[in-house]
Amino acid sequence: MSTLIEIQDAVAQLPSNEKKALQVWLNSQAEPEMTAQEEQRLLRSLDEALRDIDGGKGVSMDEVRQRVGSWAAK
Image (cartoon, rainbow, N blue to C red; front, top):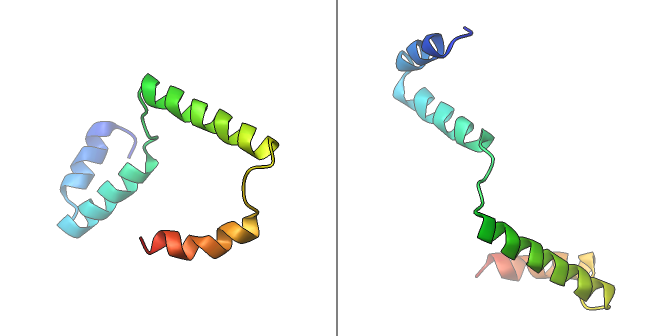
């Protein structure tokens, strides 16, 4: 199977549960898309986080591990 037409024909013959599994897998392969504005906001946030860490602000990984449970429960 090497052409899109062949793949489409094969997918059309799959049972619906396998089509759904294929859809989930294909979605997991897609790279997330960010707008330019979202990317700039993320980069600014990361720069700020690095400045905080360099300035001694932040928590250790041990403390993060301890807090994760309470964060996930929210």
